[in-house]
Length: 387
Image 1 (cartoon, rainbow, N blue to C red):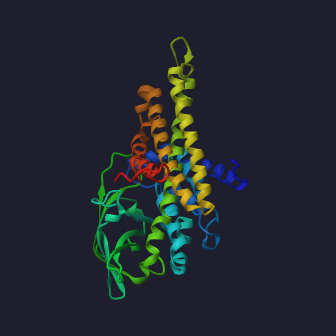
Image 2: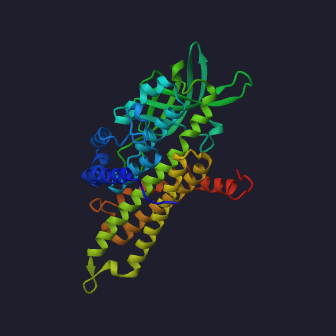
């Protein structure tokens, strides 16, 4: 057992950290509050090869794994730039297409995902279905040599930045008549696809949308994979990378908040000239948050290692645990940072309260802490299914 990164991964971490700090949290917040996107940071990360670290070299990527992409997610977040679309485009979409797409789909999309010139977002969540993808109402029906898609999706990130959306729909199995999941690559400018921006109480340059699919026609080659049988494996292929990279982003955000708070408390002096960090009522909560973040990082590393080794079932358990741990740790770290900074913690200038909405959302999405606890109770502890 080793906890050491490879020399190449160490270099990647250092390089991404330097890039993130060059932009910083001020840049991130300025873009978010202006209603703009982190276009410059994304383009530079793509040009330097960081967006495609997990994509095979034959398609323009770095040939690494989810461990490498988790490093990118964590270090940018630790610099105050938690980019949600890293989770959506390189982690989910690129993994799904690489593992289950056709060769033509891989050639068409992976190089652009690797260099950042293309973004593909992911649409699974629906208003009525919630966490139960078995109840998805978006349906795809054959229409000549293509497909017609109808349904609604909600909380879909970054649609306004992407050229395609990877839509999870249900199709009818001709042999059984039952509905089965399938994934479709739908251009965001397709006729019949409309969107409505959701106003969120989150400081983020990435927007959330409601999507409406009304007789959206796509060609046969929009179906991900060689046949409908690829649907379920393709869907699950994206879930472990999603959990792991979301967790990495949360851990990075926790590190950022603790670093900002520690710098402040070590230099802020009151009550006789002692730093406020010398008081255990300040230092102990920060130390506790730091422990929780570090424990989450260990589980993230385990989950990513298992995933890259092809041990998907074990990675599923570890990925869920990592997401739970990082979500809790990030929320604790940011809240603690705000508290120890006092009034300064609520200002934009000190750059921690700006993360409160994001870390709170991290305990809900992409899978809630309660559903993870259900998963662990059932699959790890052997309890009866509770829902």
